[in-house]
Amino acid sequence: MRKLLPLMVVVSLGSIAFAASDPAAIIAKQCKTCHGAKMEKSYLNKTKIPNTLSSKEIKEDLLGYKAGTLNRYKMGAQMKAQVAKLSEEDIEALANYIPTLK
Image 1 (spheres, rainbow, N blue to C red):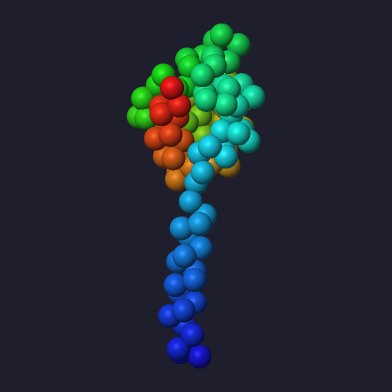
Image 2 (image 1 turned 90 degrees about the horizontal axis):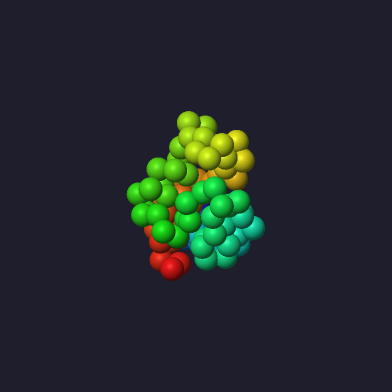
């Protein structure tokens, strides 16, 4: 049994790597309806265009919406619902990926 333990640890650690965030999949599932597939749209002509924001701005905004402390453009409740299930890893991945979609 002891000989199997290191193998199980490697398998467990390996599965963590495969669970990493896929920002393109998150956008396709949660964001593109309002912001477009390349995050190139302003929702109802009220919001900033996401792919024009810096990684820092995107991360701060998503964290603010998730915490319920940001209500920019009166979209706080809607955005909070959209980001509620995102992990910090997801938010970081989105913040780094969205500015590349120009």
